Length: 285
Length: 145
Image (cartoon, rainbow over the protein chains, first blue to last red):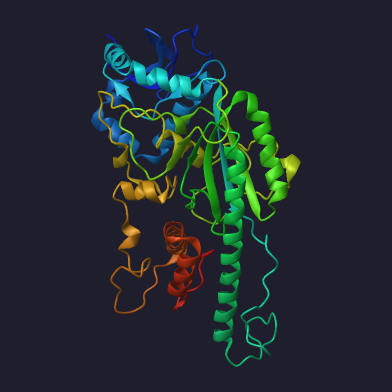
């Protein structure tokens, strides 16, 4: 007798899609298949209910190893569809008791999902981060050092108040860092404007430090852009040009992504992030 | 990078200094952070039959391995321990005597706090505040603003 299973949803694509991409497996190592309903098809996998029912799933979500694996697998499945169909990604851990339940959802939410498909069709998401380039400004001079103090003196010199000198130097450094960051931030806004002009939508995240950033990384921009495929080369080329134009920035480009940041359906959570639809650039339709 | 969390990218380090122009013409490999902030935080949000609130994910316990999400998202989840830790916030009640929490973790937390203040309150103003707060009796830490 087969184990009871649940239906894990990865993405929704148009029902015209012929089949699933080859060689793709899901969060439980399961094969991916399609649940077709009217104009929609959901990319799903059957996962053991024993592992994915509420309690076990909540436990797994708190296991960093499993979470990392699940996130990567989920994203791999979603990404596999992107080259061959407009792909509306689902957030992690959307699980139904059966295909029938899932199909009901597809019925109920069809208008929104079709809308989302239209938003993403022929487009991809590109992520750009900008960091204040360390040393992008002139080298720190002892601008706040009192006149007459030895320039560049290190600890253990003949100064009688090394602690004060240290603090003054640190303040000078911080002042330099603040200025560098402010300058980088201004440059980042300009860069963002250039890129946004080529996008049909923009999703800006607060430039708080991202996981994995080193301690000296100063993030001044963290934005996703929804770009028509036909403008992708122009967009990525612009990132190069901006890197040249703004030496005070270090730019990082990722993509093409499935349009995670541009498909707001259902219980959208207000994270205080700004999404602009229809920025500047004309939507190529 | 000296933090406790590996960058865990699919390819070469995300923060390796790069030459300009040609070196950037290709997108970089996505890091785990890039994937996490999309898969956990974005995409279609429709409640399935099996109710899991991703807010339940215990970010603090996986912080050492994954460090997920922006500060705003953490706050949304009610995770704001740094605002109540006297070592990390001048707004929290201060202990009677100085006692530094040891190690890299403390330093990293402190610098995260400084950054959060920076991003929330405006770069220059809060950087000044951060410098003031961090200056007294503590090593400069990793404050970059």
